[in-house]
Image (cartoon, rainbow, N blue to C red; front, side, top):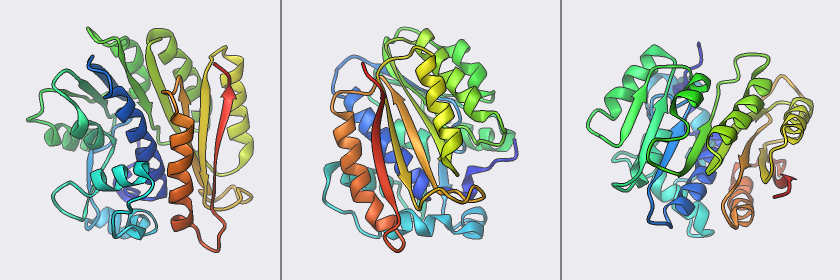
Length: 277
C-alpha cells in the first residue's frame, strides 16, 4: 500500500489506459439504458502536475506533456486529449474516476474503491458533491463480490488498475477478471498491467485462456523492446467482451499515440485477439 499514483500521473501508461477507457465509455453511452462502472483501484481521481509528487518524477513530461496541442486526427485521440485538457487548469490531469464521472449521464453510476487512506480521503473530497459517484476505502479485489452485479443496472464496465506491488499480482488479476465476468456477465472488463519483460505477460494471457473466458482482446504499447526487466518498457490493457469495433478504434488510437511518445523510433503498439468470441 505504498503506491501513490500522483508520482506517475499523466505518463505514457496513463495516456494509453485512459484513451482506451474513453473508447469503451463512448460505446456504453450510445445506448439510453444506464450503466455502472466499478473502478477498483481509483487513486485520487485528479492530479496536480505542478505538485511536489509529479514534479519529483516528471513522468508526465514524457506523456501528456508531449501533447501541448489537441491533435485533430484520429477521432479517438482528439476525444481523449480534449477531455484530458478540460479540467479548468492546464496543469490538472484527470485520473480514471474523473474521466469517467465527466461523461456520466443522470442514469449512470460510478463506484470507486481506493485502499490507501490518504488517497481515499482525497478521492472522497473530490466527489463530495457528486451523488452519482460512490467512494469506498477498501481493497478493490474484495469489492468485486460486494458490488457485482450492480444493483438495478445490467450494463457496465469493471476497470482494474492495480499497483503491481506484489509478485503474484498477475495471478491475482487473472482470477479477478474471471470473477468479474462470472458475477457480471453483461459487463465489460478492462485490466491494466505493466510490461517489464514478456514472460509474465504470456503467463497472464495463458491463465485467461485456461479460465474458459471468451472474447478477449489485448492492447499493448511498448516504449522499447522489453529486454531489460528492471525498467518499465511498456504497458497493456486486456479487455474482455470489448464493444463492437473496439479493436479498430484501439489500433487507430495507439498508432497515433506511439510516434509522439517514441524515442529513436523504438516505440510500437499491438492489438491482439487472445480468445475468440
